[in-house]
Image 1 (spheres, rainbow, N blue to C red):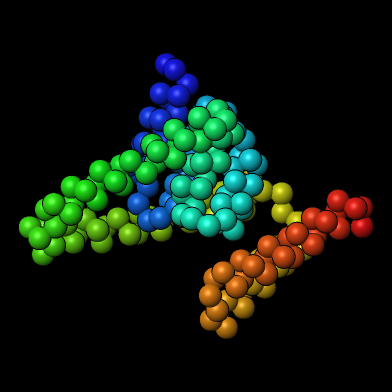
Image 2 (image 1 turned 90 degrees about the vertical axis):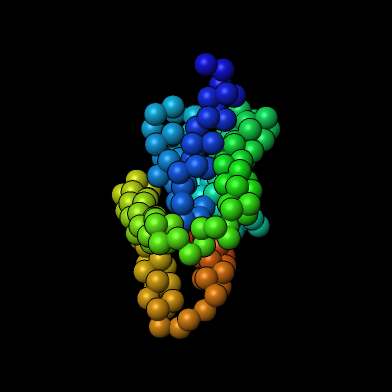
Length: 179
C-alpha cells in the first residue's frame, strides 16, 4: 500500500475513534510508533511537548508533526486532513439531525459512556509517558510541585505550562553549555 494512503487511513482512524480531545489521540499515536516505526516514542514525546505550547488543538498539532516526521510537508498535510475529516463529517451530519436526537436517552447514555473511556485512555498514556520517558530528578520535582500547586492555587493551566516551559528551557540551556 502506498505510504500516503496508509498514512491517511491511520490518521483517519485516529480521527474517528479518539473521543475526548487531542490527548485522546496519544494511545493511537503510540500504537503507530510501535507498529510502523514512522517515528520513535521519544519523538512522539517531543511532538507532544511542542504541540502543547503551540497554538491550536493538541491532537491536530501532533498529527501534523507526526505526518511531517513520516513524510515531510505532504505527510503533514495528509495526516492533518485525515485526522480532522471525521470530525468535519460527523459535525456536518449531527448538525442536520440535532433536533431529532438531543433528547434521545440512548445518545445521552452513549456520551456518558464515552467520557470514562476517554479518561482511561488518557490515564494509560500518562502512565506510559512516565515509564518510557527519561525522567530527570529536577523535572520530576517540578512536575510534582506544579501538580500539588495546581490543586492548592487554582490558576489557568497555561500558567503552569508556561512555568514548565521556562524552567525546561533554562535546564536545557544549562545542560547544553555543560553546567
